[in-house]
Length: 246
Ligand code: FPP
Image (cartoon, rainbow, N blue to C red; front, side, top):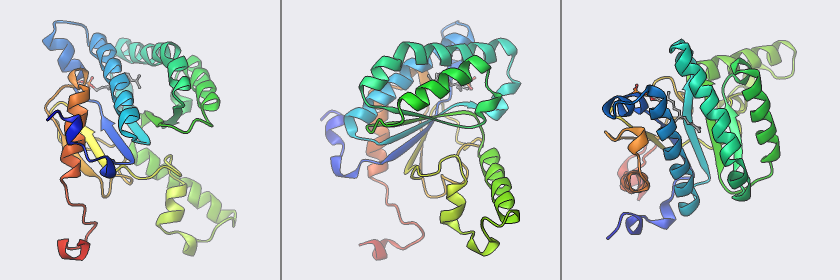
């Protein structure tokens, strides 16, 4: 039986987050420049979006650029920013036609002005699309997200818009960049690394973690189906016992 036929259509996660790792190693193993690895990785992003459409996954978040990635060589940083801008130009019509909503989480104001402008346009143009929510984490880190939320909560407390006793999970979540986006049920990380690397630190509290040795540019639709099948065989207990769940 093919992988797609093994997927239980009743147990599709609403939100999948991906740490797309291994582009550099893929490039090295093909004797290519690192940027070629990222270019090939952009094709995997397209495949992942297609899988979400096939399976009815409503939210896909990809870690495209972390706050730490600014420390990479300028040529790689510029290459990645150009790749993002070019990918948007190239894919926008298809994205919009497929009713995909684009969202960005992270410090948008740190990005090059031309990319910021482009992103603002596509965010606005796709805001009423209701198929997949495609969320790109850019200049993002989980600690930044939490600290930013805390700062805004502190400001709202001191301006008497809220009081400290109102702070609970549901209020805190409204201050995160993922406001109104459900927590991911599944996190996939490619390339054999088994770390969270400052991704969605608050939001991943109960996510199932799936690690694969496959490098991101090689991550095929079948690899994505396999991750979903693996997720569907997990027992999600949220701190309860197995007996309580049955
Ligand atoms: C990690 O691999 C990958 C990145 C830092 C960049 C990911 C970006 C893309 C795939 C570009 C396309 C994205 C979109 C949303 C169109 P790495 O460079 O750390 O690999 P390594 O650990 O093997 O060196």
